[in-house]
Length: 91
Image (cartoon, rainbow, N blue to C red; front, side, top):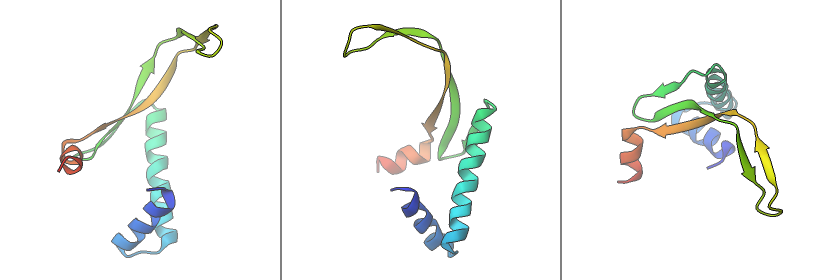
């Protein structure tokens, strides 16, 4: 499912316009993005948790050339699915 299909699904499910549904999807993504940027987490009980993880600086190897590359430290977003989501997927 892509973004357009998600907007269409929400519009049908909530019985609203596609424009309103698009704003809902945009607001959700903005809320998750700004919360993760502050290094907080977003917990949707039963669905899952969006959080961040700190990755340390490291030295890697370019597989094509074999040369070593320095990879700087960074913060990576992650998602941990909740029990209801896991059960629905495995049903």
